[in-house]
Image (cartoon, rainbow, N blue to C red; front, side):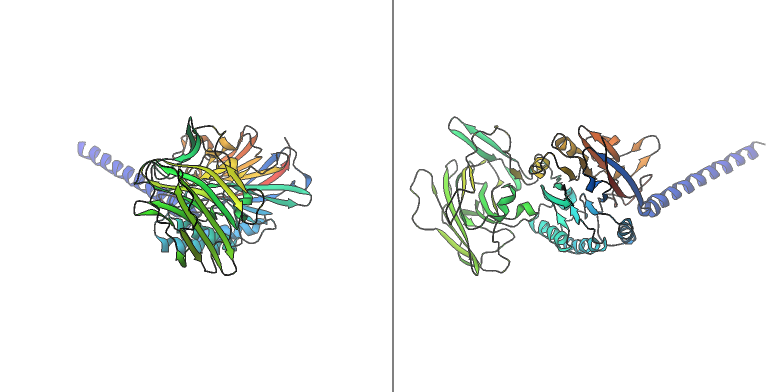
Length: 497
């Protein structure tokens, strides 16, 4: 009798174990091979107070978090279904590709992105995109590949700036704010510091290239100018410099630079994403730690070259009469216009002051900034630092009139805290993947947002701003989804409170 009872128990236990394994196998199949490809179109109607009649019923497709490494079944179906929705415009809130440190891999992936963007079709109001954390690299050439891929597909990349679209007599602004996740002290912010003698812009030690740029839209068209100012470092191991003819506001790591650092201690012209083809790039000046130096840079467009001249001297000495560096970029792809900025690397503090940009043709300065009057410990308005998130939204919507309708692409839902109160009617985000894995009763397991799992997916009101968070298309980490299918969002604007 006992043996029969034990046998039944063993058979029952075996069946339970078999059922458990079968259930796990079914869940694995669902999570790995079924749900990541089960595209869902979510239709969301968003009421906008004061919406002009021309924008009532506007159809917007929102995509995010493709994390693309190729065009597979999911990407092809996404493009097909987007075309079938006949949107007025397509908005993409970042993370086009997976992060990589291999240049050839990035180049291949961005070619897939370019081809996929072309497959989305040509909506009447265009395709507009912002950059997510996976799209922004610490390697400058990678950022150039990314920008080339987006622009090469005829799409518009909004890097902390806004663009005006006219629909009939209505004005619609599309803004885009970068979102970065660089770790530790790889890059540093630039903040106003000072003493009884005045104030200046300063950055601290960093493991990578810390840069700040003057971000006003007209600065991208600045050409044929002199850039003057002063700078100081407190550690000889630290790199310090200034940039000019910069295309940073377009998403490119392309600029000319005057810099000194440990491996090349004299101030030299050192292009980034550009090249010097002729002339002398070296000023011969080695800056002493703790001493202010003045600089004068002249950059001019010649018929067949960009001409760069520079001189550097201790502030307490007379300015040299001759140009110490005098060189040319003669390539057809040379830089021909752009904004200015500052650069720092490695140890110590680097300070910058008295920036002035004057057109060579004469007239009023394009920029005069001595950093007086700004709050100490904060970055001044209109200047954006690479790898920092604070200030990106404010800069993106800075030119948007309060009375106009404004849609903001910002990759992380956390950025809504900066958007609120800035006239943003609707902010569109991703980044969370909706949690990617959601458990019954518990919901999203990991969301990557400081706002918490409640904001992993859906439409929310945050002050005077609507926030929509999409589950996105792709996956990160493990290629699985559970109770959280990929999402194509169709947003329809409506007049309402």
